[in-house]
Length: 556
Ligand SMILES: [Zn+2]
Image 1 (cartoon, rainbow, N blue to C red):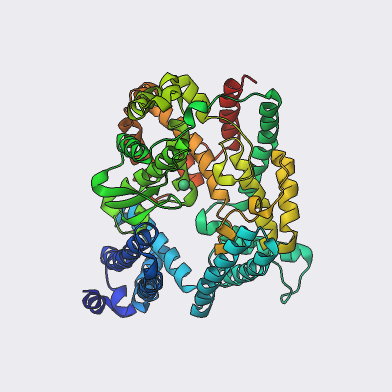
Image 2: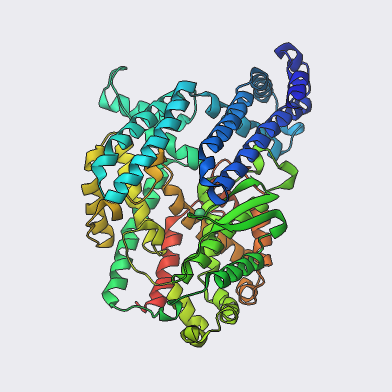
């Protein structure tokens, strides 16, 4: 079928120039959908690898995924697809396409062009080098972390930085991320550099653009500085109270089968469609899978840490609702995809924090939890009130590990990584300086003394995979979540009452219409928020949210 379609569609540019915009668009979509089908198959294989696959299949699975990636790359770099896009681009320069196409369709042209440019901007040698480096570097990181020995990982991280810079150079040449190129040029002029002299200013902007398209680095810096300035003293105030809310009723042995039943129930009540997805278990919870009609999410349960399984499930359900809520009219085309990692994270955090950590949620969910755990060993839980659950789930407790952090201290974990990785990529610090810098920032922001790199700069996998520019999206997600939830509260009468009764569908429906179905129609998360709320992304709203909530919880 693939081959037949390609034969039919391979046309000369002269032929294409006599066709209508609608016909060109339709040809583009047929090709784009084919690529999407291949990537979907790969998504399913990757889910299987994390959840079901027996260990001996690792090598054969790597071959299968790489064969699919090769096919999809081939389709993306097919000259016929390039010609269709070029012709559409020509038309766009001379006529207003909105006479022929709707805004979603016009966005599909922009997004396809970007995806093709991204896929074809790098020489295949470099793509292979990156894949091989990631696998070596990830193994080295795992060993270094086990031994808490940063020096073992350092050469691989240096190689990652070199490779990322090479990648960005190619992308800049291909005209991807103009913003990064402008920053670089400006820096070159102000430093008086010659053409052959190296300068990596702006490179971080290019990396951010991969995960948070259209988001400007100088905005990020302003938002993060504002958060730091306000959150560090808030944490100090909480610490100074020298008081902690009781959570003893959440401790003890919580049967994993019962936790599983409870998590599945909550996911379903929130709105996860089990006819269009699955909830399973994996080492690291994630949401993936092939298609909005087949969303695969995972969680993990620990018998003596009940909070983890439940919050992970609610978090991943938020991601899944975004995926299941994509616009069916544009399935398998780029405009139906999530706008950015930050916006994706806003959907998981909105459900996890704005809903799952609220008094309203616990008023509804605590009786169901008590129903599940009736053994004498859970006497304390049976006696707990919704108010106590609310406070136990919202304890602020600065710690070393990012993934275990509460919502007040979490942004500082991110800001620390952001400051280090940006300086690293742009050449202001060396890899060898990371551990000391990390530990100094940990002391300054969270008041903690890092004694081992395992608990410090070796804790996360991101850098080992060359994922630099990714961390900021977690905190952008928190800010988006607060603003999106604020807009929902304004738009939905009595939202709190609905949540108290477990009527989550009201909020889900609003998110479906205003976020999920919008897909990648807007050019950046900032645009989306502005369109929705009349304001850009605003760190002060996040600070207000945290200050009001925790002033009350800790009686500051
Ligand atoms: Zn997430």
